[in-house]
Image (cartoon, rainbow, N blue to C red; front, top):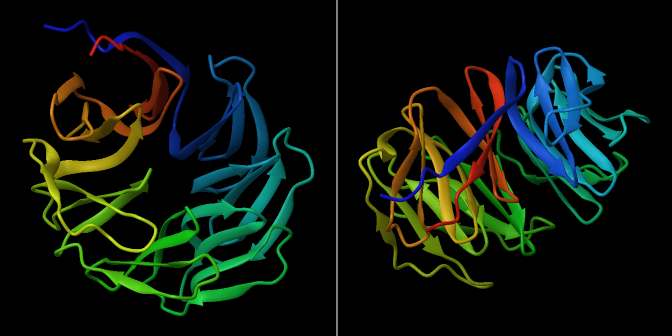
Length: 278
């Protein structure tokens, strides 16, 4: 049997921690019910950057942290917590992405939008209230819409929209030239290769008995990390060598970076050292 993949586990923030985290250099940016915080990656020097009913999504670009406040709008603040700006008033929901000088977001009943980094030049890219942003990568926006969560992509300016037939699957993650998806009932997990112009329609079913409850996914160093049924798992990118890393109380993989997994257990944020023995 291989050595335990989580040889070291440290609680680095008490709860309740919610939503995304973002890591920049030696700092983690994260959210609790009462505000946006940052701390060192070892859990030291916690600081409140902005108080309020913070949403669940966050992203960092350059020196700026972008985040939402429930029923208020989309904000940005400098990484040191100064210079807070309301960029867009409204009910912003779902993920936020930044590409170049553009900020991408979804507005309730307003569709998928983008604006200039200072909040100007707001434009609607997908005029559909069911649209939900997945990611902006390699010059394309990936998003879903309709109750069936059909997958689409377009150029970053919203032109050249195309529908991806992913055979009734629900897309949950796009990274490094791959789309990761699952059946609508969660019984199987898939990845599909993308190039700059089309999707390779051959698909690889990544069989695993725990995929029926998969929630969060991250990829690093040729491996897939995910949580399901309260446990933490990883496998090779081709679906082989699947293994359970820990049992029980995982509420979400938040980030895999620099030989560590950051995850939430019992509403607290933990950092686990990953073994590279396999």
